[in-house]
Amino acid sequence: MLIPADSLVLLIGIAASGKSTFAGRQFAPTEVLSSDALRTMIADDASAPGATDDAFDLLHRILAMRLRRGRLTVVDATNVEDWARAELVTVARRHRRPAVAIVLDVPLAVALERNATRAAPRPPPGALRRQHRWLVDSLAALPNEGFASVHHLRSPAEIDGARIERT
Image (cartoon, rainbow, N blue to C red; front, side, top):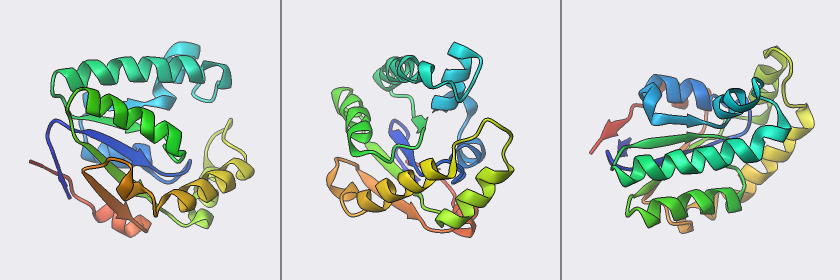
């Protein structure tokens, strides 16, 4: 999978789809902006709902700084809602950088099973089901949302076998 070296990369997938694991394997730690890590930094708790707005405010600020410098930046968040993706793509456009979508589309049953083995606190199954509906509803529109490319990985094996090359 070819990714421009100065791009914004949006990982798109429901909770427990493997986004953070994928990011850790494919990108340098300095390239990844994780909403969970920023919530933890702000509130000492990755699941602190009251810290979400602050975490995303910080994420957007760091993203703008990195893109202004032409640094590849990966956003590790669910990104399953169109308005959230639109805000991020707008930041990339403002800095004249390409935006790339990588969809980690694991079956809902796989994500539910993975989520059940996570340490508490973890999102409830209903949250994963809702995110999955939003993801499925988004798939057809992704190519029209301003991405330079959309890469759709449809199974854990496809995700594990993916390789990123920078152009």
